[in-house]
Amino acid sequence: MKPATKWQSALAALGLAFAGQASADEIRFLCYQEGNECDVIADLAKGYEKESGHTVITERVGYEVIRDQLENQLQTDAAPDLARVTNLGGLNKYYLDLRPLFDTAEIEKQYSATLPWFRAPGGEDMGVYGWMTELTVTGPYVNVSMFDDAGVELPGEGATWDDWAAALLEVKEALGLDAGLAMDRTTHRWAGPAFSHGAKFFDASGNPILVDDGFREFAEKFVSWHKNGLMPTEGWPAGQGTQYRNAAPLFLSGKVAMHMSGSWMIGNYSDNIKDFEWRVVPAPCGMGGCGAMPGGSAIVALKSTRYPQAAAGFIEYMSRTENAEAYAARTKSITSHQGLQNSGVDYQDASPAVASALSTYASSIGKAAETTPQAFTFQGYHKNFVIYGVVPDYLTQVINGEITLDEGLSAIDADVAAKIAE
Image 1 (cartoon, helix red, strand yellow):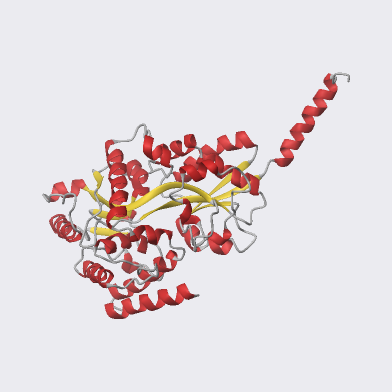
Image 2 (image 1 turned 120 degrees about the vertical axis):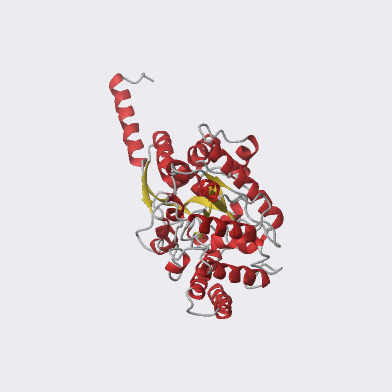
């Protein structure tokens, strides 16, 4: 056989180039961020684009779009190829199973603790559906400067919610604040304190029960915190229905001394708080333990994608150890990669406040696992977003005096039961 001429070799190379271009796909990634998460993912995606030839279009949206509009989009031609989601089990029917598209052995090894959160209930689904971008855990941020200025000592580890409420009221009165404590308007933030007060959320068979003695006790306390001025009118009382309200602006502007939020806010506060000292404190405790809600965000590929191989390949790329570590380091988040959890993430230029926050939140996950395991059940429950929406709706009506507490709690139980049965 004669060797190929230079002309033939050039034609062959050109053919390969055209073949590569023909297989290069453009995939749309719908992403919400509360800090710099989407920015970091978009930057890391450049490596995938170079490696694969595909293009990743990162479309940044507000969290409300993911929570309130994504499922509707998934039922139309407007669906993205990938999305960053938090309702892991609830959107399962829309996910693309990655197992037929690449060898998922490494993902199954490094992310085995969180893979069940994506799956359909019943224990029969063994699909691999996405990459957990980070683990999150709820807990409070405090304005240390306000406590210092007010001459009020910060409650220590093991302090109860009652201890914190009393201290925050002292700070409020001493500094003339409108409120002391702000909490994001969502059951996800409300649940941790409820667990601390003994709320179980589920019976022994795993069925939602919600309104037990612990749930009622914290609901009463929560309503009273609004009546005595501990909590602001711009928070829960200003919302309607299932509306989510982020309380971060109240903390950033110095209107409150504590923000009950979670680990995803570390980067935001590290970058944007310049005028006061802030700190993450351990989750307050109660008769039920030291409750905190675990969770996190994940990138999933959707069944409706026209480019399953490209979408799956992007998830595989992002889940690799080096990329997972880069994401955690640059977003200052808690990695879900189990190997990195053991070896540790190099957070590089993390400030003392950030390093302390990450350590405190990581500890809170461990304590919640020990004292309030119902938090992990709630996170993996495939209809948890029903509960997320119902509780703020009726508790807000109670806070605003539209219905009584008994009426609100009865409505919560009835509405959750009806929606879960649908």
